Image (cartoon, rainbow, N blue to C red; front, side, top):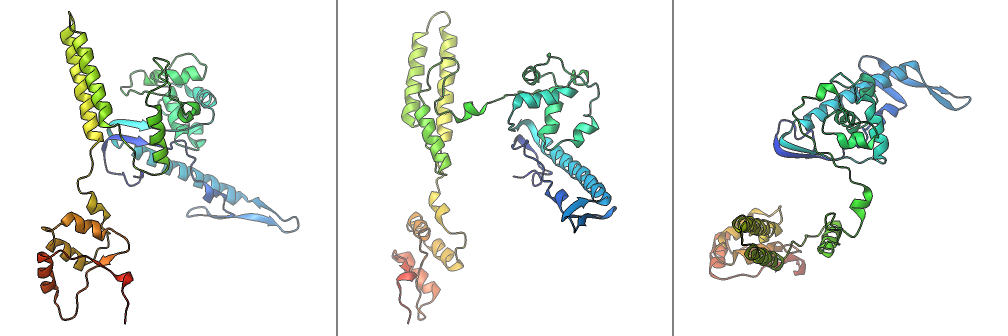
Length: 333
């Protein structure tokens, strides 16, 4: 869902990706600019030297249009930031995080709540506005450390009630093939499974979930561990292990869920009224098989001769199971 379409709606959790994407300013580079108040702004063309120069009117209209574009992007960003009810996740990418953090730290100690006008005018993406704002927040210690500055924040945000969790992930951590457990320093046993899932996502194929056998092994392991830990603190340990087992089963049950009417998803959206009538008439006789037949390619139809009416044919269908006839295999004439 785009930000424009989400206007007026609210969601418990909102993900906003691509906040570092540059604003579209291609219209500002047009050779002929127009404005409802400033008029026309053409370029001056030197025919002898075959060179075009921007005129004063062109520069003025371009500057005004740029400010109006930034104002519109600010309104769009406001819509995005006011959609969540409980939590928001912002995602952005930069080439050099340390360099960006150093640039944002210029306004770290600003006593004013609003960002300076020159910084707003120089913004080329949402991250150029969000970054300096977060740099002054008490929870942005990781950004200030990345910029090499002291861990001080702006006084105007000292009593801010919002809470931010900022994570910086390098490209190597995302693209590496082997996933290493940061706590144990051992290669994750699920590496092969994750590789298969990533390959399936790249190929736009269904992702295989954790097999039920793995969940059963984890459940048995948790039960064995609970039995071994019975002692002075055994009751608390057993309760913790039972809760862990319950959560594992709950996650497996939810992730292993499949749509019970998968055959219906294979029916074409442009199914004719005649086909729908036939389907309704055959609901009591192998409805799933009929739905699967209609979903096959090429399209299948039931042939009704001129001597027979639809009602009589439907009555016959209720008595016997008819096999559809493929029109592409019939000869006309």
